[in-house]
Length: 382
Image (tube, rainbow, N blue to C red):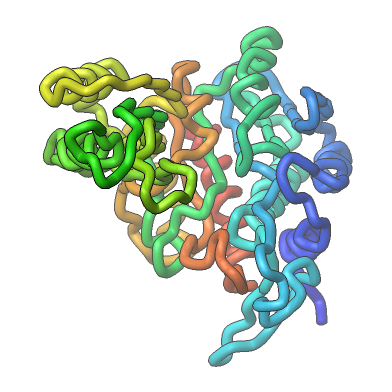
């Protein structure tokens, strides 16, 4: 059976078990393809993280495509219907599906972006502007040595893009039904509530930190806002709690919990921190706090770029994508502060990080055509 260049490249990428932060040669495959049409490619190793920056052309507009070659673990591989790194194609209800870890998040999109760039440059030798492609092997992990660090490289080498398309899986149910025009910010915290240890039979001599932490959590789960024009309301989740030594008759001295806020443009890290400290003071608690900012909210406000992406999606899928800011964070949060307009456009996200992750095989080629149309319209209408 004959497959398209984007489909074949997707299969080759999925077969490489590139669990964060390892790349295992994925970026070399992408680099080899782009070098064929004249892209200048550089592999930047930062710690254990491998990054690929490829660019061609000069001047404005500068359109960048952004992605990652790392994947999360397959988990309990025995539960998969097919080997998660075999890139198995199965027909289901008349539709070919490509199974494999990273098929949706986001190796098929990496392939579609690379082939779109390849095809455009091959057929447009004298285009005006700059095209680039930035890929990391550490998006799913702690991000060390990844896109945040590569932003310094972009600034130092005059490669900061005007526009950036992130190929993350943005579609909800079918290809093209949603694009992400922004993302909420992410703030995490580790809160240690300090009490008084003692025997459970003498409650007047103890100050149970678990009870105290529950009072604080009750305060924190209250809504901070009801959302804004483009963003849903700020959300709060407790992600871990630990206390005690496992002894049933001993009240522990401390209770520590981890939590996270996904916040909109009505909030800031400082406003959330102030709210937490206010609750602690109100409840008269003794706490140790550590806040970790994972990313600020961002929003693409360039109506021209939004229309280009919507028109490109519609031309291929006949879907007019809704504009969304829901979901998790992406590496777009590091590019947006450079003054770049960032939009996420990709495959269906329903199976990402799950057992039996899969994508519609035909959608890979459709996504390639969407990306190629975005390139044409961006360079033509700038």
